[in-house]
Length: 157
Length: 157
Image (cartoon, rainbow over all chains, first blue to last red; front, side, top):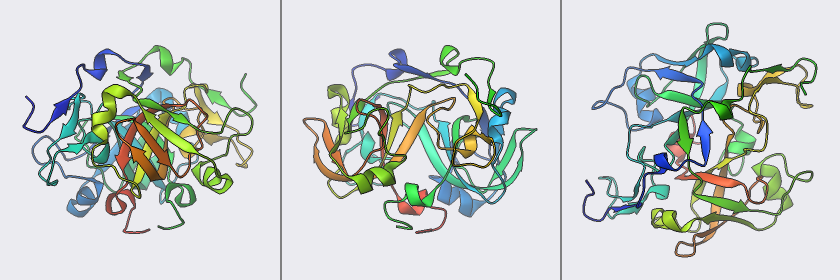
């Protein structure tokens, strides 16, 4: 399955977990395999309706989130292989390590996207956001407020 | 254990995992419980030596990372409770949902920090970064390149 230049781990990280993740909900998006945008920015440009659905037990945790806020979504891109450490994406001139790439194929497939809340109904667990590059149905792992003073190296850089 | 105004899940997410995380290494920092900075920005201001150590099996994945690059570190703040959905931090006037907070106490304690690589020795699995607010020994989950065109809502915002 490896392409020339690729290097794999000798094991599948899915089989040797050190800790467990729970799915707190899932993404509803227009995207499926084959016509998915490359990143949240491309998703924003192509447009559509993007909903983060939060499962009932976790909805109390939404208190304080409001339309207009910028949030970080963490989601689980669990369909890709987790053992390919060096990859050969078309965008790179040479084989590149997974930790220098945003590929969904990585030891821990936790992806992140910076998005803006368009509307929120906390009771229904429905958060409409301005963009997502995730497949429809992608499990959600976390939502965090995006804080420019913390989440940039220097304010606004 | 709950303070007035706090709300907990009825279960511990650690006991009902939907997926598994592997630790790819750990952070070496000056911080331990009781005198830890609040966030990576405060850590940067206080200064010190901050090393991300990558375990041997994962080091091939570092190809392409270089000093000067800005990266996102994901790490596992697994010491805190995972079931407190509404919290009462001193910084907030009212009880606030965990998804509107950066508290380490959250259903999935995956924290993130935007940092700059100061030096890297990929063979040794040693990456010196400019700051980290993590306790010494905190497990690492992922490293991703920080891409301003993707990781801000609008370039530079």
